[in-house]
Image (cartoon, rainbow, N blue to C red):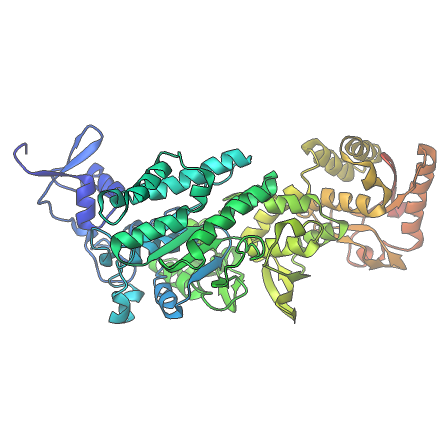
Amino acid sequence: MLNMHMIKAKDLAQKWHLTSRRIGQLCAEGMIPGAVKQGRCWMIPADVKKPDVLQKTGSKEGFRNSTTALLPCSVGITSYKEASTECYYVDKTRLIKELIDEHSKVFLFIRPRRFGKTLTMDMVKTFFEISESDTSVYFKGREIWGCGDEYKRYQGAYPVIYISFKDAHQKTWEDMLRSLKFTIKNEFRRHNELLSGTALTESDKKYFNRILDMEADEIEYQAALGELSYMLSAHYAAKTIIIIDEYDTPIQQGYSNGYYEQTTQFMRNFFSAGLKDNANLEFGILTGILRVAKESLFSGLNNLVVNSILDEKYDEYFGFTEAEVRKMADYYGKADKMGEIRYWYDGYRFGSREIYNPWSVISYFNNNCKAKAFWSRTSENDVISELLRHGSKEMSESLTDLLQDKEVSAEIDTDIIYPEIEGNQDSVYSFLLVAGYLKISNYIAEMDDRQFCGLLIPNKEVKAVFRKEILENLSMLFTKPTVRNCQLALRTQDSELLKDTLRAFLLQSAGSLDLSHENFYHGMMLGLLAIMSDDYLIRSNRESGEGRFDIQMEPRMRTMPGVIMEFKVGKDYDQEKLEKLSKEAVKQIIDKKYTVDMVERGVKEIQLYGIAFGGKNVSVETRNHHEI
């Protein structure tokens, strides 16, 4: 063994077209004869033969065990090389043909989080990038390889800049700028071969080293995308492809944390240097969740082709189609699970195509086909949180309706200028749509370049996530004791506890400007009660009897009591006047026969609440409809 020529795991990985991690796993499992561990590294006989478990079968799913072992699911894997050779891989390589055929300069793909953007961009990078090793092996047998020799000539023919801003979640501009510089530095370091080449001038190399040493000034970092593309094109005598993943993350953080202008100015100059009128650019791709308006970020960039979830082109390349999920279910012998998979993870609509959440489908098979909300809390949504904090009564009503599988209507505009979105209720729905919380259920009308659409929650998973993430943000002003005490008061019909809970909340949280309109109190109560939508169908401002109630809570289980609330607001009322007003509210419920609809639907017990607000004071009067 000592006289045998040995190589490192990373050398064998390159030879077998696997990752070093996979080689390490095989060594640890005893699958590679003669492998020995020296310190932290595996050393392997140079002439070792590839085990049968890694021999290619020729199927489009990739590499399979020659016996009957199934490929694992690629949960969280964003490396195309690893996903396509060591895991079950849903072939999206035809996207490469589409990009080549369209021949546009800059593409912007907008899709929700965890819909395969990063893996797909790494696939594009792997296909086009010049490499010391033969990367064509990762595409033979894939769809792109069957598209003709005219596409094969693009493989491995271009230098590629690949930058991801996935880690740009800093709270201050100073920390964000340092993060951006570090990200840019890492991409320069990935192209260290430029320093040993002859194409760069001494001035170019000094600039390159200033970036590496993080000693360049802010202007030099803003110019980095254009400068690096020039250097790569000079070195390789070929135009450069630029890929920017999660381009909008710094912009979102800037908006949420108060440094929007600084980050927008930096990113505008950074993108412009690389993507606007760049003679060294073959083409560029940006991916993100939100489309930031040209006027604020892509100023002057007239070569940008935007593809959002509303567009039919490229609709199949992010997320899984019905046919792809069915094929995956067949592969794992779980065809009988398609109904459950569809119920939990289908329902998205990109362009004209029904799409499944790929992250959740993969996680489902990886979890022994036990369904749950895998998509929950897979990233931050600070912008949505900010918008919901300023939500109106109407928004609270609509979000409650959505949880109860009711369609809401909104004008959808995916072209976003952040400073203009506050106070615009339709912006919230546009954000929720592009972020994956809602789907378009109905195209109602088209106005200019905007769509007026019906919206629904896509599936069971998102409904669970919606309740946890969106309503939590909507009700983030409510402490856990406030929510708990409110629920306890309603279930035990304790009017004193409800009064004390509401008054304590108003004393701690409400501003004086909030307290002049009934709409504020109505929205506050809807936000507080929406969390109980598992137990109740919650309706607001609906007709019943001879009028319109404020809030109705119809129990899903008929053994529970129903609730009807009527609100009154008395400006500058003392407690005695408020008590009288709350009694009037209960009388209105009785006189207008608001209980009629629930009684007809079989609710046997209904609790009536008259709630009077006066500034930060509250009075609660309650009656049972049997006492009427």
